[in-house]
Length: 228
Image (cartoon, rainbow, N blue to C red; front, top):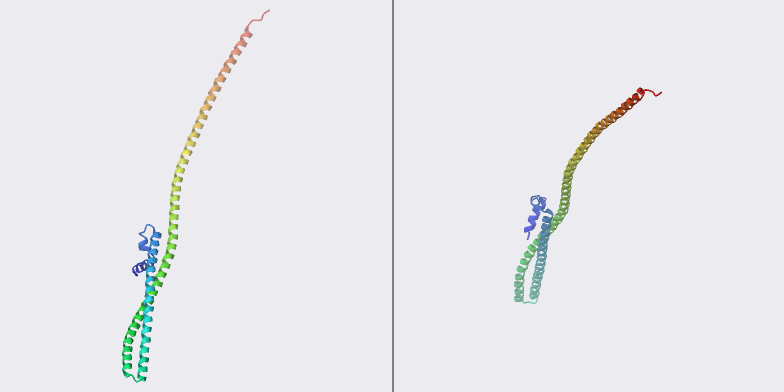
């Protein structure tokens, strides 16, 4: 009857550490313990009710036997007063027989009463243990949810760290591409300046050539004889 109670008492006193550390889901494990405790308590309650009923029955039987003992003594006295000693003797013999039975019932009732009190104390103790278990379950559930949330956050942060590293690498590549583009632009500008200078040189040479040609033509006209 108390097989599970003793086991749960040990678990509660040790904070459930040894068993819960091996459980995949501690909350579900505690739920099962609580369910088993409730079933055991229901059994104990039925046993207590039965024992109390037995105690009351023994007490009633004892009271009836004690009442009969008193009655036989009164009847023996009445027989003596009536002068019937033989009847008085028979009444006393029956009184003694019922007296022995009453004393036996009284002892049985005393033991039954003691057992009833023990069972009621045990039941109260089990209910207290169940209350503590339920409180521990609420605490354990809250701690379990906190641990799950913390694990989820940590995993998310780990993912963010990996993404940030990847982002940093992409940023480095973009910066490298920008540097290469800037170098290419600078080289293109250098080449363009050289082309412009060459083009200007060609243009200047052409003008100089035309200028020399015009000078030659002018000198040629000056050297021609004048017409009278």
